[in-house]
Image (cartoon, rainbow, N blue to C red; front, side, top):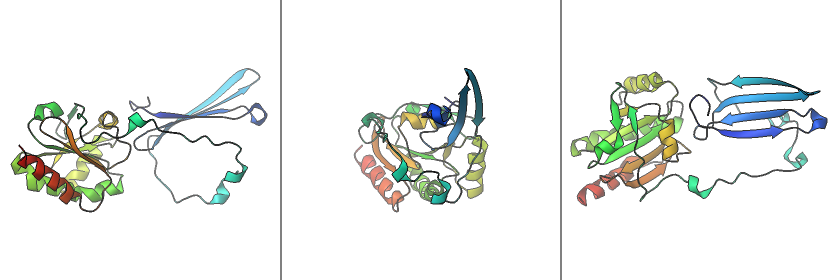
Length: 231
């Protein structure tokens, strides 16, 4: 756990003839952010270490192939990571994990308090381009179905809650915002954003999708109407 966030740990160890150093990388499984790097060397029984924590970073242009010391053909062994089946994102028929978070005004929001309502959950972040592109469609769901008792919620994965709050104010989005949502995203087994869930009145997930594919308003709207008509 780094900065209260669970992380994958990638361990790299060099052989003794190459210095015997050990490097650990701590990576956020949802956002793929590098949270922490640890570098250790052992010489004559003494351990020397360097720990770097990353509070902020951004993507640069793709590095040229010449930036790498070894081409893929020169690597002796590659072990591919296989994700266990039980890490697949929750989907239709699964129970929506209950959670309680604070909204942009500091008021608590608990999912189970809204049994009987249809709840739309959108996991997003301000630094995620596809998330931002989808937000007008999420707002359109709010505008269309709020009067019918549908609750639209955006769950921000931004480290700073104020960044998400100010962004929504600036862009004129007025659906409910919940912050500090990383652990909730893990409960829903979200690995990519944006990820959207429609939770039915009985707490079951009715619809789930990843990305900001064209027609999200129409697809989710169709699910909401069908669900409302079946009540």
